[in-house]
Length: 161
Image (cartoon, helix red, strand yellow):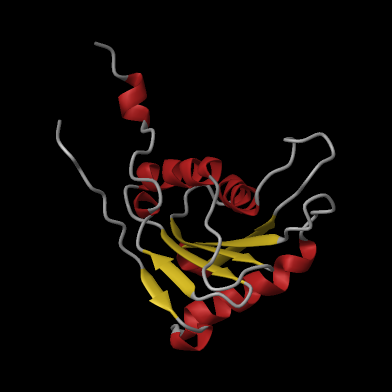
């Protein structure tokens, strides 16, 4: 037996004022979009912004449905919309904001991590992830891989032995 360890690298900022002007404005825009969340069941509002190359911004919010689990998370709403409307543009950043939160931000669910990873692998370049929840600190990850170190990859699934 061998004990192994995974380390996750990220940056932590105390306030949005510590961020670049671009990231400050992206978080602000994402936060303003929280009102578009349709979350009558959980009351947990989530907004996401996908920043594509050429400074194209695509917003999404979580969309719930009484027939659980028919709803979608904000991250998947935004990324699916971005890639449907701008299929040839690379994703540079994903910003995820929630209304609730205390010291640390909420992170994306496993399904959203895997969906985002698919696009990172396809474009062969990292996608930065910025997380902010309520009054939390801000976490910035250089790549989706930092959030999903053992992701499914198409090439592994398609290998025939």
